[in-house]
Image (cartoon, rainbow, N blue to C red):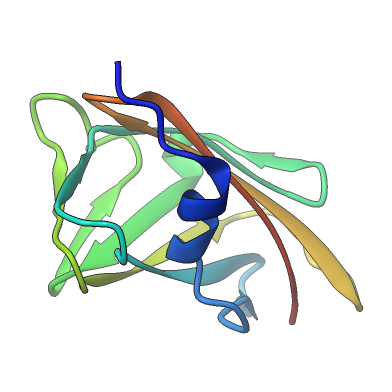
Length: 122
């Protein structure tokens, strides 16, 4: 199994991209600065202790929108070097004024569960 150091994983998150959604929830932008890769699932996304399950998550990249439940080993997201994507978490109020803690747990066929922990302001 491949191990990706945390300091490299954090580079994927686009600082300042955290946005509040009108219907409740939030969105962030991710950019692959590491190299070609696959996302084979979303374990969960947590924003300030509010947990979003795969059914509450959407990933949009290259004009294609997939719900977190559609992303799997059989239907992975190809995430090429330099490619950006928007991760949308819906249905729950989660943001606060000031610093917000975001933890994204995604699955990669080579590395297993990859955990990205960052902080950002709205």
